Amino acid sequence: MYEMNFDAPCKVHFMGIGGISMSGLAEILIQDGFSVSGSDVKESDITAILRKLGADIHIGQVAENITEDIDVVVYTAAIHPDNEEYKRAAELGIPMLTRAQLLGQIMKKYKYGIAVSGTHGKTTTTSMMSHVLLAAEKDPTITIGGMLDCIGGNIRVGHSDYFVTEACEYTNSYHAFNPYISIILNVDADHLDFFKDIDEIAQSFKTFAEILPKDGLLVVNGDMKYKDFIVSELSCRYITFGLEAGNDYSATDITFDELGHPTYTLVVRGEKQDTITLHSTGLHNVMNSLSVIAVSDFLDIDRDAVKTGLINCTSAKRRFEHKGVTSEGVKVLDDYAHHPTEIAATLEAVKNLEYNKSWCVFQPHTYTRTYALLDEFAQALKNCDEVVLADIYAAREKDTGKVSSKDLAERINSIGGNALYLGDFSSIEKYLKKNCKKNDLLITMGAGNIDSIGDSMLKK
Image 1 (cartoon, rainbow, N blue to C red):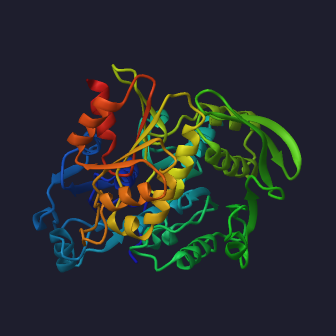
Image 2: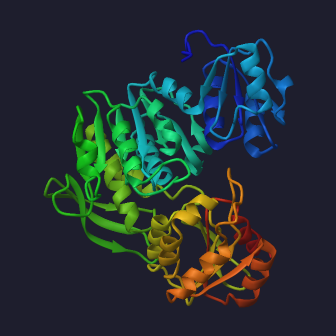
Image 3: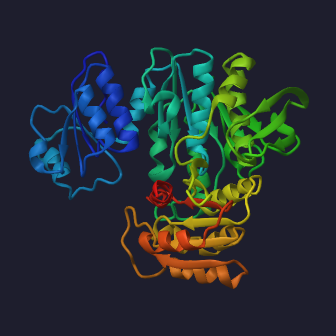
């Protein structure tokens, strides 16, 4: 594998530079003195920012973008060997790194590299950890899979030993990371277009945990089924968190305010220690915050800074985001939930809010996930008063004809739910404008572009 020399900056080309993660890595290299170029399929706010920072951006991915003066090419899982730029780089013999390999090499520069993993909750937990490090004035470098208001985007380049990042299990990319501290929030069945089954997913997380150095730390969900399997051969220390008795870090006396924000008593190894208040909504975020507190204690971060960071941490964009109220008096929220477990947690959090009727506009994400988890999606969504379904967001996949959003609507209705398939955004918006009433709550949900419906309704 090509090794970056951070003491001798070179020219790096990013294929897919407009992506939320790739752009963050590009900005880090620019700040470190590297010459950066990149390509993407369309202009965006992200490419505009990178241009202002000095990156040479190409719209469209063609062979001519790859010039002989490029020292290394970085690419994402979305780039395949038939891509023109990829083929040209191979022809010229230019070294190539995956996004994860580059991130792993960047992590080596930092003493305290913190990697937040798990099937669900990575972005929110990374946001919490970032707020705590900022409140403690640790000047961290942050790369996160969402737009974070407190850093004005998805990347912050600090000048300290602290680095925090999300670590996604898809394609086992996080196996290329080099963390000193890792969090495993949960292990669930997802990305079944890559993984064979849940056992293979659990093995992936176990391998990720075993990357840690002997003096490192794993913070792991002690309530989950796979905890013992993951830690069984671990060489470093581990700390558990969860809501069940016996975890190193747990919570009791949990209450919620009118916006669904939790307050709880922190229990550390059986001792009640503190009162913690969050501005992230729902019981699942109590769990996420416990993992952050465990890491913070390991790093000897002052508890007052931890509490300040957590209470200042509103959710990242598209994570139970309160968008506003329409002219008709409908409250609009948006959430990135695209897995049944995430949907169930989000709709449970909705119950802590005040409204007349709840509406969920859901856009399934990928055919593979929808087909594999159709029953689980139906069970999760039936808990909303009214469900309106958009067509499946294909992402990286092609429609095989095996499943559709209409199938999901039928499954929800067959188990006592109330779902309607409408498909296109225009039809959905017209239906909502006609049927959502004052003091109803509307949540747009999914990892695609479904949030545009709520945005459109708020503008009218």
